Length: 109
Image 1 (cartoon, helix red, strand yellow):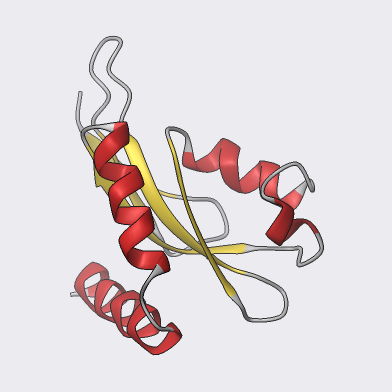
Image 2 (cartoon, rainbow, N blue to C red):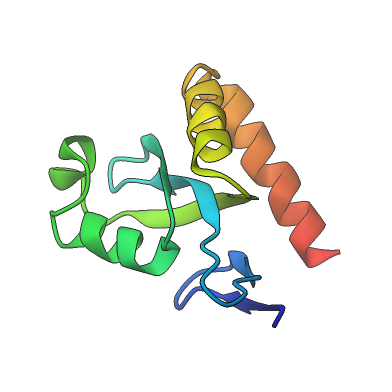
């Protein structure tokens, strides 16, 4: 079954393409309270954002709560998601912000 939904409290739309037993992998960016950006990967966006906001996520975000999801990408494999996470982490802040803005425009058009 395929569908899309918005995360609660966010303008980020997540495609839900999980077939029986299939787990999608996501690369994501959150904006922290201090406006810094953190990039990670997960198989469950909602659970991971909740973990970040409960102080159980990455060490980096623990002292920068709350975090807000600002960008996601869906990948078929864990390896693809991790490779993309690495590539995004190598981007400049300006490149990340431009990518986030471009994705917002595509969602709303």
